[in-house]
Image 1 (spheres, rainbow, N blue to C red):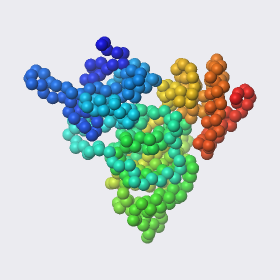
Image 2: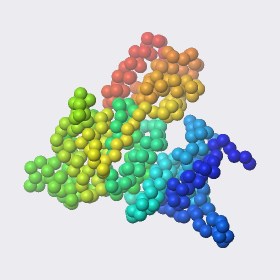
Image 3: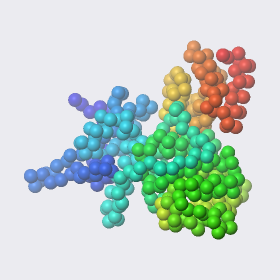
Image 4: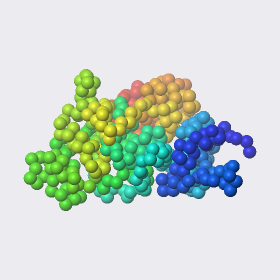
Length: 410
């Protein structure tokens, strides 16, 4: 059988193997895949370059939005031993693309550290959080389109105990909250941070820092035997004084831009307005225990710019295949060219792609017979109870209602 268009070249296979130190990328295997042959002039190889997204339709984790060039690229290649390759392609529903991308990142980082002679801690996964407090609901929509590269970076930093703060930065509507919600709620198999609990807070819903800190301290006191507020001037003082006794936790802060300096502030752009919030985030970043703060904002976290324990992930507009996948998930039919044109007209914003599809398609393309039923579907989605409470969604729903009425759409 000849080589298929999406098959890896020999050069890509060799590069993939070399980037892992010729070891299986499964963090629970790490078996060497190269060794000596009985013939002194030869060596043996038991490793295989696996496709993260399958090369052919019907294969494990096949992504129809990829091109053949994407499928045969080094970014889509994962070095595995033969046993792990067979296991992952047999049980591909469990071993998702996100998990394999994270393992690829881990394997290459471990190979880099081993080459430099740095000791590495075990990467065996820890149990899920024992305690959870979702004060406000994050998003994890069933129609969420996975952004593999961004998820891989986020998970890699989250699992690195030396990293104490990960911020997702981008304009409103690019999917910051959705990505965090998806990973924390639906990708638990990828997470191995040794924290006992998770505390989620949205400053969109409640921007008073004093209320947030009181709720956080109350949650910690509930799950520990600590009385942090005793003999303390304030809940924040009690929390900071007790950090050495408190088990590490995951703290999620959504919508931090409401408490940051705006663009007009010049060099102070992105600095925390509230001193208590700044002191808390900086203290958690510098504490010895592996706390991690996950933040979303439209602005960079200026106060952490030079902190080696902080990482920032900038989310841009969705890629063409991701925008097209959103439309497909919502029932839009048509060519990829039409989907790409639509996505570009909305500057690649996730929320715009999800909510404005019928408005754009009806006014910019030749009418299609599928559109009346699709308009009805979008109308149902926008009026559904699952989307209530969002000011952005409310505005989109109102605009949709007016447009539908003026055009006499169903």
